[in-house]
Length: 88
Image 1 (tube, helix red, strand yellow):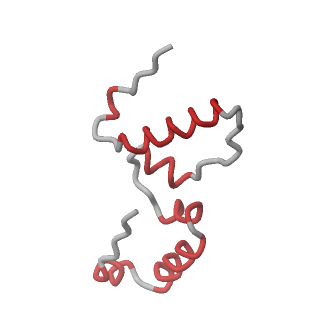
Image 2: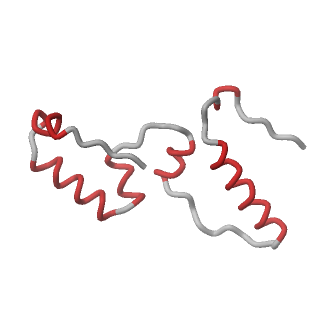
């Protein structure tokens, strides 16, 4: 069979799809199960969906706790002035 990407997938990072395709192909050739689950943050990254602070706990608990600590100890106005940006 043939699988096509949904038309709304324009602008996605095809390298990620190629990587996961190769990973699945390797598992099939080696007759190996892939037992690891993709974490929520990686799935959202592939889907080009917004990654929130809560998503970070699935990626790295230390980063999540550090950012959450900043958020809880700082007012919203001060957070805006800090202009904290997170890039993955």
